[in-house]
Image (tube, rainbow, N blue to C red; front, top):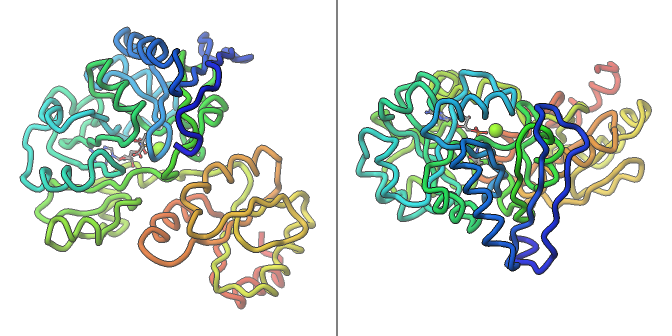
Length: 367
Ligand code: TXA
Ligand code: MG
């Protein structure tokens, strides 16, 4: 983790707001003497059918026992999640996959060897017991082994697969720090394990292995060429219709702060960019996330290649400053850039690819 194992004192604080009658605590899990106690407390809550938020290498997850229907209901209620959007089951070992999947394809062994633990989720045929709970009526189940020591230790101690969506309220940017989880989940869950900032920053790649040809349902840090080089076959980048059919989560507007998001590609010139900044700044405080240096607004400096790691934090922080709009510079080109663009397009209200488009937007006063 960015801030590594820490000797920071364990801290606990209580929510001011108790939305569902629950007091939410945050326990810092560093290399401190309290690590064992914090993880044991979290594991006990999970065994008792409660929810615990925990760090993964991608984003924070909101975990609960993947084998209990009542716990799955709690996850959907805490997040306000649309009820048809299935959850990913998080495991600590490849042997556990058979608890949730009825048929394990050969390709999984090679994928697991190359990418697990890591930011890859694989969709497989589901066992009967999870079809109507975790999978929301689908015949398939999504599984992954996260690459984070706290997540792995928690799953091991709790001795169960953890159903875990990202730990944000539905529609909000995914949380990459414990305080983001607290913003969204205070009063809704009893415990958040604080493992510092997440390294990857965007959610795992979702790969469907249930059709004849494997297909990417959600792009991420594990790219199509990474997958193709391991599987030795072409992988479909599911087009929108296909993705909608196979992965209900891709249907919903996601990752959005309250302020409108304006995405500006690197092809937009400095002159057109500054014209846009001046135009939008007339409305009020304007936020900017990127590597250019505008003078007028709340600014978070991020190089395009680092955007994945800082995107959700940036959107949340600028939103907290009550910006009337947030301009985000698009990521660098390439497969990882495309994965970040996938998230940005879902958050964005406007997308500026060229000067002509930008000038037209300003001239016509579109809003
Ligand atoms: O990195 C991640 O994947 C994070 C961390 C916490 O592991 N989790 C995450 O979960 O992003 P969530 O629930 O926010 O997104 C899960 C995505 C959704 O788009 C959902 O529709 C898709 O995975 N999914 C889950 N089960 C599926 C299935 N059986 N078939 C197709 N898509 C599935
Ligand atoms: Mg999510």
